[in-house]
Length: 230
Image (cartoon, rainbow, N blue to C red; front, side, top):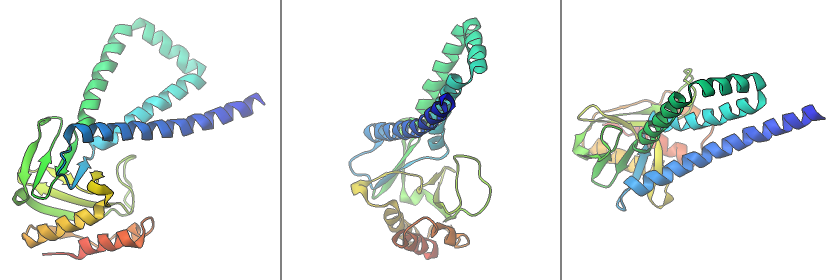
């Protein structure tokens, strides 16, 4: 009976970790919108790979769960903390201040006539016009083995390259005005970029994978984007 209770508690803890991670992600997105997103935005991107750093908090939660369930690990950690308390606390606090700063500032805003790119190194934001877009690369990720928390088979990507070499995947969406689906906005932008004769690399190679988890209305938009070429 005791073992059954432990299993149930463990399962509930895993569910709680997932919910808490989602809550942290939603909170960060809300902070980003409050700090960076202007009223005239069309959409904004939560930039990769900084967006995936949110999962470090999930690792913290798993570490806490491991601490609770494993007496040996708990004893070792407590002993280590007693010996190096100041160093551990200062390192942990500094690391997390930098972490939240990197995550929160990883925002790109798209309006109807400009792009505003924020980053760890440019928290004040750097403005670009659509004319500063020098290349578009779009497609769907295939069967390749990706690192955890990066990309999955069937994920759509739409990467714009700016004249300073910056690359932004607009499909890594943070929010869209009026809750319109991002693929509709990306299609509008794509038509504009193609009409501006911006070089575009597009591939239908893995398109069928997107149909495995998306409704037809969205895969039709992806198809339109991929088939719209210079």
